[in-house]
Length: 53
View 1 (spheres, rainbow, N blue to C red):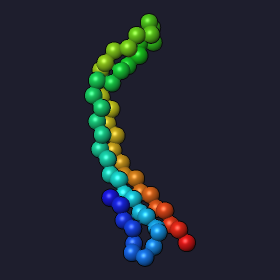
View 2: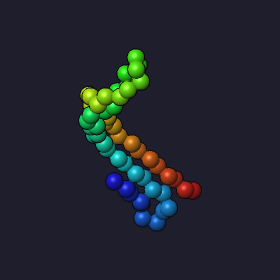
View 3: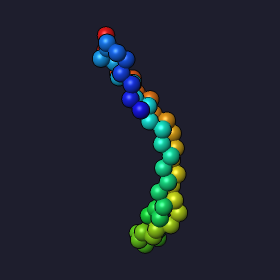
C-alpha cells in the first residue's frame, strides 16, 4: 500500500508478507551433494517513509 498526502512530496509505503518456500535445497556436508526437503516460512511487515521537507 502506498500513500502520498495531498500537497506534499512525502511517500509512505506499507508491505505485509507471508511467504512459504517448499522443497528447499539442503547440502549434505559429507559429500557436498544437495537434496530437496523441508520448507521455509517467512512473515513480516515493512514500513518505509520518505519525507521531503
